[in-house]
Amino acid sequence: MNELEYSTEALEVKGLFYNKKITVYVEGKDDPLFWDNLFSLAEIEAHIEDVGGKNELEKYYDKIINEEATFLIATDNDNSEFMDDTINHPNIIRSYGYSIENSMYYYLPPIEKTVSNFCRQKLDISDEFNNWVVNFSNSVYDLIILDIANNRFKKGVSIFGDNCYRFLTGQKSHKICSTKTTEFINSVKSHFTTEEINEVKDLVDQSEKELWFMIKGHFITHALINLIKHTVKKNTGTSPSMTPDFIYSMTIDCREDWENRIDIKTVVDRIKEINNSA
Image (spheres, rainbow, N blue to C red):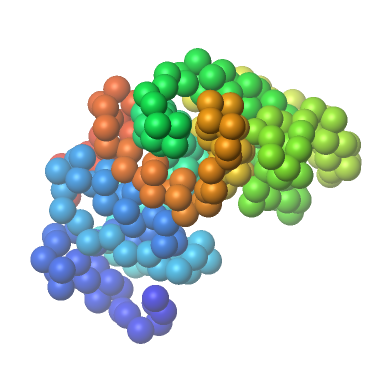
């Protein structure tokens, strides 16, 4: 969507054309369905529209801050709680984790159901999955620190990137290779001072949020795919074909048992607060 085609007033009332009281703008094509599910949990009907990218969304921030626009923005957290320049505003809603994928991939039942379907038998993979979440998170602790430091101190270094392939023990692995991780850290650590790293470590260690929710969401995707393939192959001898689109469709709902999920309930409560104060 080209925002130059619309005035602030037109952007504010766009939802009315869809018989929705509230208009919400999100970053990209993966986002509307996730946020529609959360607004549904908050019992709020909203028109949710993606703007075509992070750079485009920046223009909407400007309209809220400088023009007092009344529409809402729903966006990835991007570890914003660790940044000094985070824009906080009642009309801006952020995901609990780094991005929506952190919540999508954290909830086991749809993943376990998919594995069971591939294996033609009901399986309990809770121990394996939960151990993987903890081990994967701990394995990228130093990358989390560098990624936050990179954004906090404006270093301009790519830390996580868009996938985790280069850090895995093998192309088909779901585990992080400590040697590859150390080599990468050594290649970029000159960009950061000891004081900067220690400052971020203190912030992260004091946070009540699990490390999983501080990892860039897209970084996790291929490791999760490999975990599912590994689990199915272990039980059937064959590895299924799987794509990021399949993972998306499998995990996007996020509404089941939501009241017992801090990542979902926190955001739903925030949406309710905005609606009640409107």
